[in-house]
Image 1: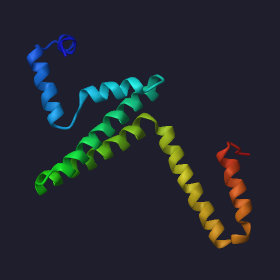
Image 2 (image 1 turned 60 degrees about the vertical axis):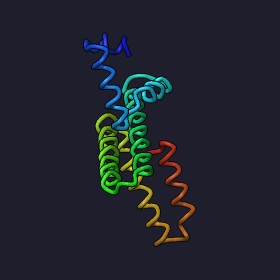
Image 3 (image 1 turned 45 degrees about the vertical axis):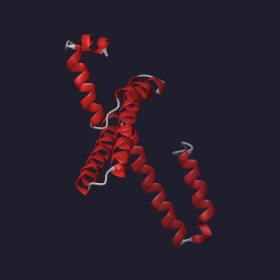
Length: 141
């Protein structure tokens, strides 16, 4: 904590207060640091890993808060914050890895189309599945 306070250019007491406030709000910096160390790789993948790790820890803390709260208003606030956190995670993924988001959209469209073909033409199911598998393995021509 002392090194972090020094690096941020704030007194130790301020850093300690920030740490305590963050923990009370559901952010556990120690868990985040540990999760960040687990994330392998570099560049955008590492950044996304850290964002996802932080978001998942935040979601877990909010779920614990909801489960442990006997107060309806506190539970509702935690649920709203949980929804906001999930929305921010999805947005970060789209913004930082648009090709992965586009791939997810394409895969969903291909699956829906294949399902429709199989339902409307059940005798072609084997051919449709073989074609989808070829597409998934990278064949495009």
